Length: 154
Image 1: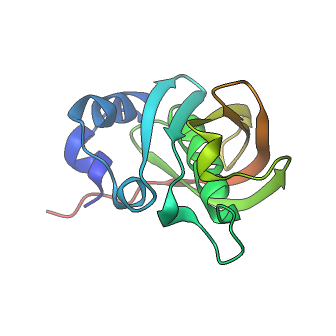
Image 2: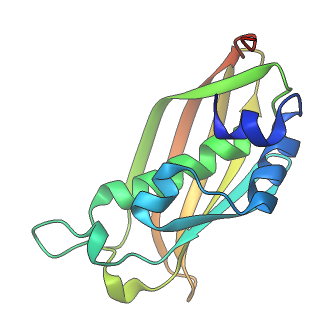
């Protein structure tokens, strides 16, 4: 069973995500990369984190996957917030553009995702990764597959 099913079984996507935030529980990826899910509203989701040594690559920069994961999470949860209780999603494509190098000195980063459009089977979202000073570090566009949620097993 997924964490959102444990916390918000039978709820629509927005209610599930609000319940997840209110619970204070964090899925494994948030623990692994040390970032937080901080806001959700219809068609919008925000994650934030401060990169540390755990996110560094061998060349002395924060690995691009750190930014990509924040952006993918923001895009995905923005879409999730508009799904019914019978729907789920998965990322089909994520395109990330890196505008500025991320280091531990970048401080708190904020990834804000927004739904561009959503249909019966596909959704499109975009996200921006910015620093507390407003600097743009990365942007992303995402294509997501909207699927029927499997029936719960008893």
